[in-house]
Length: 444
Image 1 (cartoon, rainbow, N blue to C red):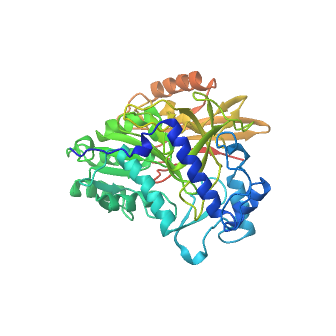
Image 2: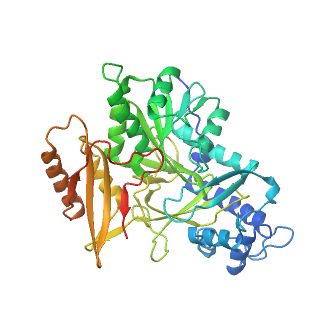
């Protein structure tokens, strides 16, 4: 059995982790000041300056006390900068000739961000992805199937390159139908599948329709699915459905195009995402006051990546709502963890008759009903009032649709404090998704 070796940086005590972060932050700031126009302006406005020799003119950071003096960065800041300095913005530290990789955000909300990397910054992200693989107990003998189309979004591009460097056999699944992907997984004996939680369920749905009389999906060679792009991997009901359908373990992972692969689940501690604090500074702030919140309380994840100096982000407001825990994990890592993964997004919350509704809460209820194979929530407005409705598709074997609707209505009322109208949709009517799903539609 392959032995997972956890680097010492992931097992250090909290003081050592903070010291490493402080040292690397000073190195990052010295490297980008005067070279990265976007952050030079921001640092000047914050009163943090460096001389030509790279030494700080102001006193060295006391880290936890002075970290808050560094300016926050928002997605709106980056979008505005790219609009003012097209096409890349002014946030590049190196000359444009040194950049070799192009990606862009998936733009589920608003205009996509264009993002460039040099070979060095790309390699840094690959090292971060290797931490994800260590957490999932992926080894060189594994065959990793990537069930997604290779578009301009960051997606699993870094996972593919990192898997190759790890020595695993990496198989791209772009340009294939779901049936072809399932057939390829069978033919090559894939042991690891990388995809979104939604697409893991879609593949299971297709397998149940196609494999009458054949080998069921849970008897396949796949032993672990690494999922990302949506919070579903950390939603217990969604996670259970994937694991039951595939007969395999789900390992969640979280990252952003502009940030990189920031957190990962370990095999030994399901339901938590380790923050890769050897490569990132991760703060949890009250989104209203921007004050730090203590462990155990929810807040917004704010991230600084320490090794992507060619296109960095400093104190980036991710919009992800999380709860941090700092006690060591049973796996031996001392990295802080996010309890329950990404709980919600600050920009996803919708107020319905005075009740704050998050898409993740709706999904956690709906996925508890095995009869439902797909769903869509719609928020509509009548005057100043908003209402929430739900469409669901039922599995072909679901016989008592009224009972499902009744049970789902009761569970949603308990969870949300709202009565949500539910309509049964015809089979195949609701859209299926390969990448990030758009099941929470806000009209008007």
